[in-house]
Image 1 (cartoon, helix red, strand yellow):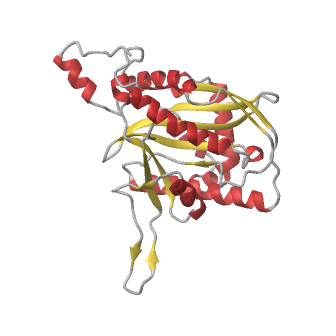
Image 2 (cartoon, rainbow, N blue to C red):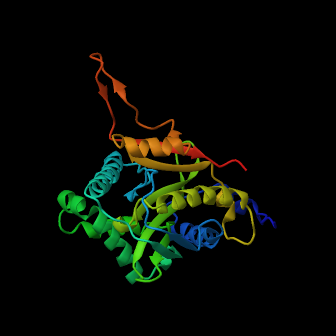
Image 3 (cartoon, rainbow, N blue to C red):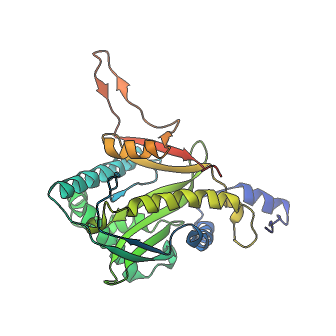
Length: 284
């Protein structure tokens, strides 16, 4: 591997800095990450429609904002979708055989029609919640959030119908304790849930974090000095016990700054709105 060396003291300082508000740099980082995604995410997903016994769901896992209210809102979104999926399973929703192919986009390179399709999937999964909370024009605010600079989208499309059946979005972010690869969203069309899609996506997500760390300083990728990360992180609603158990089984633990349960004097447990979870890089 060829390692890029800083040409000057100022270049060296810029390598050490990581500014999520610098849209230009974040776009270049996203372009570089997008080039690496195919090495860890499957080009195709082929599965039969048999339900998986492992917990999976299409839901949203958003980056923790510095604004507490925004974090609470996004955590509630994940919980809302978990309940929607549970209800669908209880009424006997059926899944389909899947033959899907992948497309990878830094958000700033995504075609408008593709973006509208993934927004439509969010609408199908979470639209009733958004309309209840934000009103009929909720998509305007959601669109701004989903266009955040630095995001990379991994989208799977049904080979037969050409419909988007699942997507995930990820981004390198600087948390209080360390820089991590954050899982912003996983959305899976209801008819393709519980057949193993979620397991494949999150496994590939974990591999991507490790791969990026291995490629720190690789001159083939612009701003690869910013690939360094300590692992993966996500936000999850505190009462989503099934999701929590799934993430714990995957090796996630509470971050040091995660809100935690409080035990009152009357021994009543008060839970926060959300937990912040993190997972170290996979060992080779």
